[in-house]
Image (cartoon, rainbow, N blue to C red; front, side, top):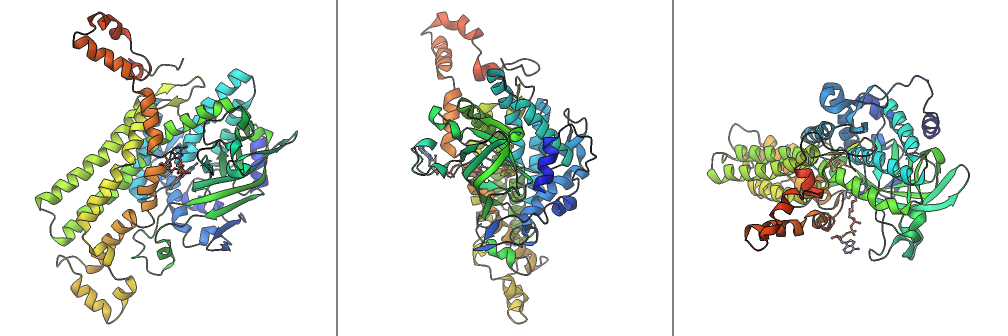
Length: 525
Ligand SMILES: Cc1cc2nc3c(=O)[nH]c(=O)nc-3n(C[C@H](O)[C@H](O)[C@H](O)COP(=O)(O)OP(=O)(O)OC[C@H]3O[C@@H](n4cnc5c(N)ncnc54)[C@H](O)[C@@H]3O)c2cc1C
Ligand code: SF4
């Protein structure tokens, strides 16, 4: 696959007929036989596609293809690069409406899988790199933008999955990349040749990387002149020589290896995270989109996180499932009509819709960048993500309240299936008489899965740290909060500085400029 993919990307104008991956089943087949170096439980996995712990994460990505077949309006877009309809995860946004549809697609996929479907990091990296490569070339006169567009054309033609590899392992957080004891703690260029660059280092927590076809490697933070070798962006096939994947454990993941499936809670779908280790991995020049332009690293990180922090609307779709599970267990327990139960469901919904609202508000308040791509509003994206660091925890707390203690004291499916003990369980763990005990157990296991088990990784801890820990959002909000402008508003109305009234009526810049922008989103200056 790697050689094949390299050729396809190296020859963007090639007229060879390509059959894109369209369905979930075709996608799953496309992952077979890649001979990846993947390690889990101290062993190299022969075929990740068939591993019971890996497979639910592949099923979740497969849904992104099947949704596109079932609902092309929502999950595909007409690509101006190819003139063809492509999966929306591979589309470069050409309007605010495109960004809003990304969010709606994300909510829908969260509803359908109850977990992380893994394709948003690649989508957001693609959109961020469209404008950043353009602006590097505008300053340095290079060809990164054309290379990047040629890469995206080929990815769209094949219908591949892209993983976004940004977060380095980082070592001592108080030190810059070049100042680390071990230079490999941030991914960096170790060798340059006439044909390309070689990189080494490791990326942590990489969502869906083994389920992807390509990786976009990017720097993780602002860089200085001494970090020049760390300023590298490139595209690498997942099966490139020199890459090792070390699979991340998820809470209760062994339940996916048990027969039956009830105890897994959500036996069909899960997320995936792994560490990617690069050992002298080659990137040919045509797939290098930044090499040494350290001053653009911060721009790339900020633009990527701007897109990605409102992609967390995915959590509202997952939240819909959890609210449904909490309402179902209340129903099964016969307490559905109690006023405090209803009130808790209202509170969960209020929190969930707050996440959704800020996400799509950020997308609607978009601006057109110099390269032509649209970017959502950074302030509101950070507000969205900051909500996400808190609200799913509260929704999870309320779901556990409604579930009752049985959620964590249930016996296993083997007891339920046991000829003697099973009868006892069916008698004593019954809720309302019309509801089968097994169904009551299933819904409790789902709540456990989403708040303590495999899918709590995506719904809770990923909500905390993904796209940056909470403090990263507070820094961005602080940068954009325009306190001086707000102080002027207050001083004017309080009669302290009445002469600034005229000034503040025209002084609508930065975030306030975007809030009051009339008509179509303006071109970015
Ligand atoms: C489930 C999951 C999926 C993810 N998927 C991806 C992915 O697909 N691609 C990707 O690139 N990344 C991914 N991430 C990584 C994510 O962006 C990081 O987790 C996040 O940026 C925080 O980095 P960290 O985990 O190394 O935490 P740390 O950096 O160790 O942060 C821990 C705490 O220390 C604080 N801290 C860190 N540095 C400093 C400092 N210099 N000064 C003061 N305080 C500091 C933080 O604010 C935080 O409170 C994922 C993370 C998770 C949990
Ligand atoms: S956590 Fe959400 S935004 Fe991130 S990749 Fe998974 S589904 Fe997409």
